[in-house]
Image 1: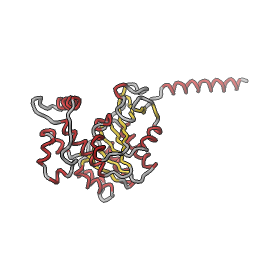
Image 2: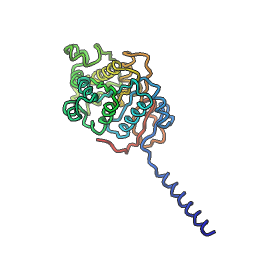
Image 3: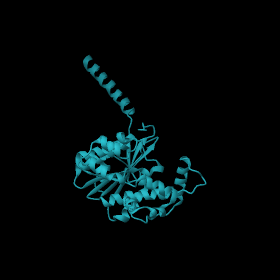
Image 4: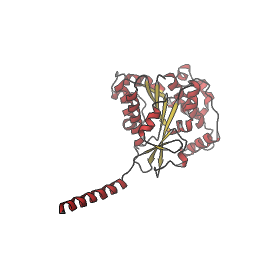
Length: 293
């Protein structure tokens, strides 16, 4: 009898400890649909697998975003690898030959790193993706316009692109690039100009430079489309199905597009009103999550 009592006491203590541990569990992320319904990773993946093009918007310095980019890519590939192409904002069209040579196994990572224009967080955040493409024999597309041309448009506007050589224009979306300024875009890029130290009296075309990037990424995706395309970009380029997506749909209509974005919230138990509708799936990460830079 005493032994039974002891066993019951041990089980009671273990049960209580389990309750405490569960109460202290920390979630690294939560996934929600655009209307705030909470779903698990598998449900999100099931939906994304039905898309022709998946835009994964990221917060550039969020480790959870980068980890899930890799996991989504790996899991989509495991379901159906035929005709899968991946590409990223972080690589520019004039580096496509280098990307092809690296993913094709013709040059080493050292040679690639020395010659390609790589973001500072390449090794921690983008190396796993391009290495996956190399390992699996996937096409990896450098989708973004060379930064020198985005800078040129920022200073002179889209019309100035007509001054470039035919070779230069081959590295971007066909001209002319449709652009219609909005109050929201002008306010956004006016703010960006202020925080970057730009003079308030200078004419600047931040929004037009962004349009050049979005159109070129869309053109790059459309031109390399096979069965399915996964694209990695900053949230701003695909939030609310804007940015790249209207250009893509004009270049290659009729494709099923789905979007993911990464958002930070103090409380990830429910989707914040400010994040509703930003993407088909919103990955919410705690605001105190460690950043990669």
